Image (cartoon, rainbow, N blue to C red; front, side, top):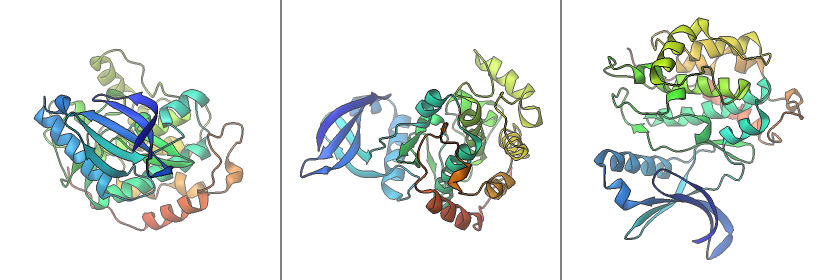
Length: 300
């Protein structure tokens, strides 16, 4: 592989755009990871191994795929899908907010990706706009560095404060389920509709906990952009602090909001659209098939 241009810096290394030297028309993103940094922490090495395994194993249009894995004496190299459209966080910054039909279009793709993750009992545990990438108008869920594979419940506390479910931030929680991802998806949906600031303005972990206690579930406050009652209902049921009362995955897939919004491109406001929705028919067809599947919910 030949590196073409620098794309960004991560926690353990850099990301470059590259092409296959023997086939220069094939473009990739190459994530470099310093071995010495990973070796400092057995837990981080374990999480990295899971990340590589997940992305190498799964082939799905809405999941970032690892095409190759290389190693030198100093670095690991993950050869990933190149997502020329950047990430959702940048798109929200650019547009300030998305129209409801477009946000639903992207939510359906996120849901489609999670149906595939559930087949393998994978929790993502760090769903946020910066980890959702665009290849054309296709959303790809990426950055599986905090993923958990094979367990219905787990106990490790990690994630990003704004999008982290409250049970992950509660010291009294012994185990949690994949419903933590539903909370995060709800916060991402909120940010699509109202901006990257998110549902709560906070400065400390205590501030955030207080805000969540006072302004979530049926007490959730909405931004200034007008949205449908169905969108409000879904947000309140996703951003529900009690995981027992939080919407289930099957209820999420069959929510009225998604049923109400067809794939008709005429619903998208061109003035606020991030992309031309060339894959809308494919997205709708996959989502309709996924609605019929059942998710095995754990009991909490």
